[in-house]
Image 1 (spheres, rainbow, N blue to C red):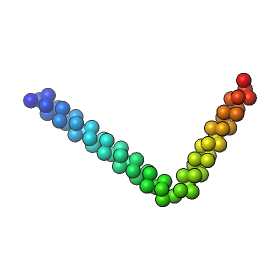
Image 2: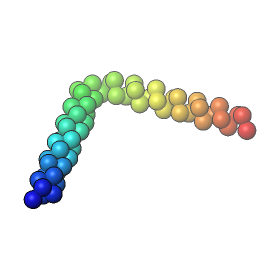
Image 3: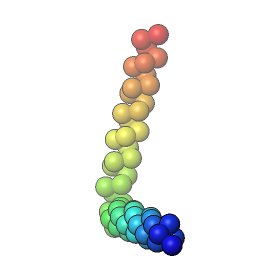
Image 4: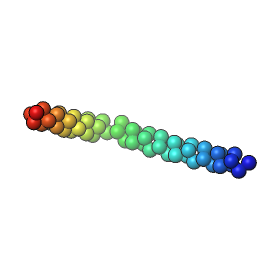
Length: 61
């Protein structure tokens, strides 16, 4: 009986954490959808950084 109780408590915590994660992800996605220019800016900055690092590594070889 104690094992069943522990399993139940474990599953409730697991579900709680999954729900928290998806709520956080949904909130972040909604913020990005509201500001598509900011998303584009972040994406372009990251892409430029990756390309710059890639070119830098290729020149070192």
